[in-house]
Image 1 (cartoon, rainbow, N blue to C red):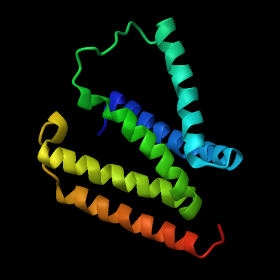
Image 2 (image 1 turned 120 degrees about the horizontal axis):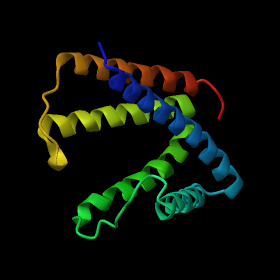
Image 3 (image 1 turned 90 degrees about the vertical axis):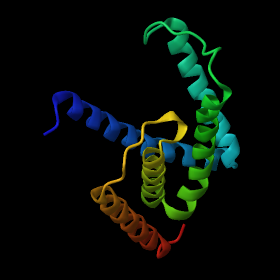
Image 4 (image 1 turned 45 degrees about the horizontal axis):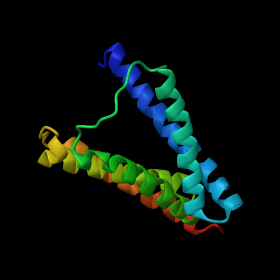
Length: 155
């Protein structure tokens, strides 16, 4: 049984996932208006930069400091985020929002399982269970079903 904190964390992740799906639709529409997915990605990150800058400058989420002593590799999250937004603009157009989001989720799960299994990027090693493999297989089937459903419809 999950604790209250566990339930709150699970609901937070579900909310984040819902936000990604809604954000993808915003970005797809923005790309249509901008007539270019990379320009839409740029606008997306410009808006995010302004918002996060205001939050940091106003100290609304507590005190912060620039990570000046951090190793350069940890800034790769920004690169991954930019690639995510840009790639999903292409995939959502071809596959639809549902199949694209399910595919992204499958990629996240596969990446997380590899990171856990091998302790990559400084994470602790966490062996992959057979239940986790079943979950990955079911998600793979969901992606295939959603993509196949979309294949029968016009873009």
